[in-house]
Length: 145
Image 1 (cartoon, rainbow, N blue to C red):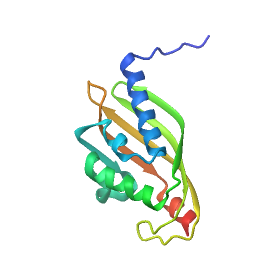
Image 2 (tube, helix red, strand yellow):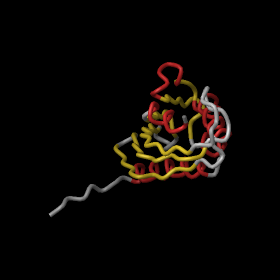
Image 3 (cartoon, rainbow, N blue to C red):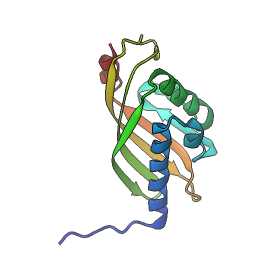
Image 4 (cartoon, rainbow, N blue to C red):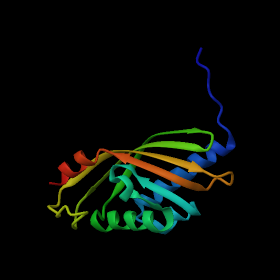
């Protein structure tokens, strides 16, 4: 017999916030994305090293807006989502077609499909305080060249 883990209301609420984040991402709505976070929230785009760290509301918003500008049909599929306490991990496939130069990669109109892992951290009010984002950046770049 399989034992089921019962999730707390907070874990379910936090999962819902993550799904709302990805829905806003699909809708190309950075305002909705960042409004799910505290004013002092941070983000780390891990493959970019220290250059990929910054505030959620400014740095994150600018990166997501750049992605949306360069891949106007950007979309995502949440493949798995797990919660444990104040941490929610989302396995997400992000895909789109490049229309403009992106971070030094000229547009050739190629499509990418990339597995990402987002690890969200939340405060007691169920607002995002930090997110780590990881993906295979070499594979992503090779799909565009």
